[in-house]
Image (cartoon, helix red, strand yellow):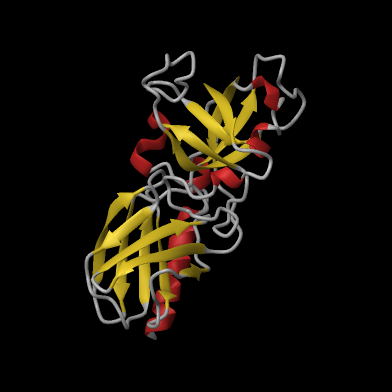
Length: 257
């Protein structure tokens, strides 16, 4: 069989294997209690960047519908990219009748050990807390409330286009930020294959970044990604051309369902 056709078949089979599987991971997902605050203003400018490493959230596909999450939810960065449905509950500041809002985890809300967890230290363990962008907060409650009780649950991420790979590093160290991931939205592990190499396992750096200590310049690069939540695997063949360079972002039209 032609090699390019073989690779396409692998991608199709991988995606077919995920249909039903990834959605089943969220079917009947229970609502849990948490609290929510917001940071920044209506422009969501302060939310750019963040611990997941997505940089400009408009360019990476997330926009203003994002949140920093407390340590117990952040899970050492493996929760980066996950989507949460959030609704305001049990507060006179709730916009009752408004639909629950869906946000993507893009940042960490660190503990504030100088404050009581019920009085300023909202992100202290073991609290589940969402520090939303102001536009996201304003969809479910009056921003003047400051903090509100919420219920939340995991939902599947609906992304347009394919996965984005932002390259950093140098000739002997490839650091890749994985963005715009659909389905579960998260990544458990990742591998890279140069056009002249076998598969090379990448280690988790931090947030949504993975690294490989290998010389890969001058080779087109393919990636193998496995979801943290569903354990499903997909292949992004030839995601970056042989002329790839650090500082650029490359797009693969492969994505999780």
